[in-house]
Image 1: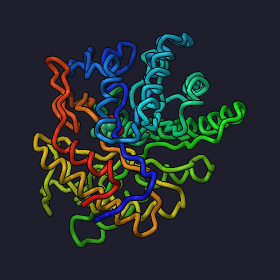
Image 2: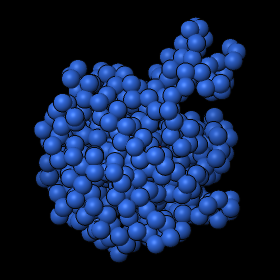
Image 3: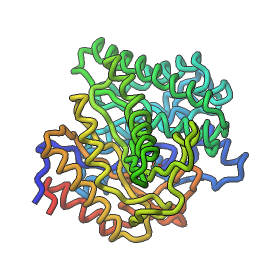
Length: 405
Ligand code: FCB
């Protein structure tokens, strides 16, 4: 029997672009059209069906929900702020509160307004001001309803996919630009952190809790060779910690959101900077069960990372953890394994605020389209009906009792 702390946040996570549908002013929408990729179209129609989806979350005993606000709805054209869309999100957050679901609100989850992308997006340091203006507009309206804010979701994942691999808009391949993007994200967070705290201060509200959602991976050396071990060490220090260190040094983290999915098996073909940074095992040495995108299922990695992150002496939040699979039994095995790891870390004195399964409902998985099924609730895309999966019911038992058997 594993008992989790009292007041633990039990929830699921989504992001606006992946579930809402018809975000026609987003750079992703424009890119889908240009690239001929699967169109997000009406996605899960969550924009219309959010109340019903939150009813499900509540019925499944969850007490928290992580979601994001779509900047391209709030500010469809530069400097033109939509009161109607702002009201929509006020209603959404109120709907969570009415159901006793603690909202965790992300301000940037991969998608940008098209006009912002046309101005050079996150490559340009002078564009950070636009994100701050949007942040101010939203936070002023929601401050009395929201305690937990996440400024940026997975800054390095975004920079890597959009500016190194070039598989996400704007499809560039430049380490240099990826570096600028990363830097601008850190500046945006540091300034947004101060801005958000300032707004709560002016309104005499209790201080909010502000963080980012940091994607972390377990880097496991493939062979007992110095170069594999060295590369794994480098990647762990750089990928998992460097960005967080920066924000930490500026005292701009009230807690740390960690998104954990999988491990990376590190096998370096030869010495070389690019090899040290990029080479991964191609042979599937040390095979493990995988999700439908081929990512290894490795719950031990979550334990190791939680222990490593203890050094900051800040509360941690597992802001995403999930699996896409047609095998719902495997989904539960995945959730169970990762909760077990979280519990083990808690027993070692790590402060964990909560766990957010990715995702409440199946959704649009970026460049991979609608194929991967991450939801504990399924979505039939022909009629948008929701189907509660067995894993959701099992997770609901844990959410209800705070005990994992
Ligand atoms: C994370 C993203 C999220 C979702 C999951 C599967 O990296 O934050 O939007 O796509 O992966």
